[in-house]
Length: 64
Length: 195
Image 1 (cartoon, rainbow over the protein chains, first blue to last red):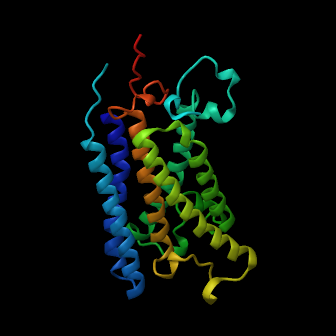
Image 2: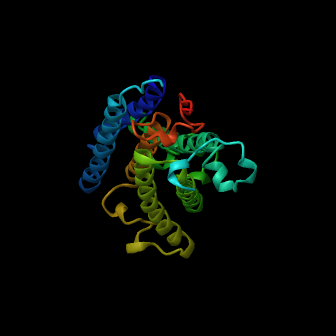
Image 3: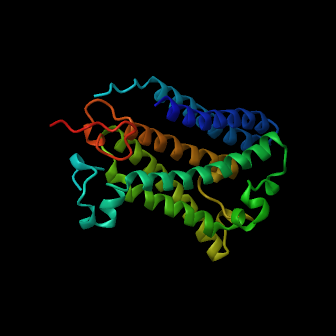
């Protein structure tokens, strides 16, 4: 279970890192594009964090 | 296929239709193939944004990995639409293998992909008609009116990928009370049926 969570988390961390990098990059863009880009990058970053929290808060199944 | 026997493994699969097979004994392999395709596409978006945000490449030259050697795969609206459609169909035909909470997350991913597919259909329509919305020099989707294309499609793919992996996770590691998953070949630690 932890192996699967770790593999998924790797992708989520890459996504989060790119969202942060994109946020910084978008700061150099003209105004209407900057707000639009930052809005969806923030949503994607929050989604990645939320997904990670959900996966790691799930308890290990009890073997039967 | 009733939800209570979704994704069950049996020895009667020779009598099953292909739809029952990919949601039953072949569910694991179907999801592996589908996940590989989705991850490859997703990785291309991550590579493209890495090129733009971290390497400082100009947007038209940031074509991911495959697009560096075969530029038309990035510029072809038909290919983008085709991929969005294939993804939508795969979400639909693989849905009956999921039950309970994993089914809910799978269908959330399906509906987000449905909208994503509509956006690509709009782009493909403009490319076919050689006539762009709002007098734009390039094909334009609705959300592109306020959000740049690269960020928008990174977001769409993230918004589909996240509920999809949650659905697969809950399918592999079923929550208490969702025992219908336990007999599936996808289950990480399949439980034995009680006598």
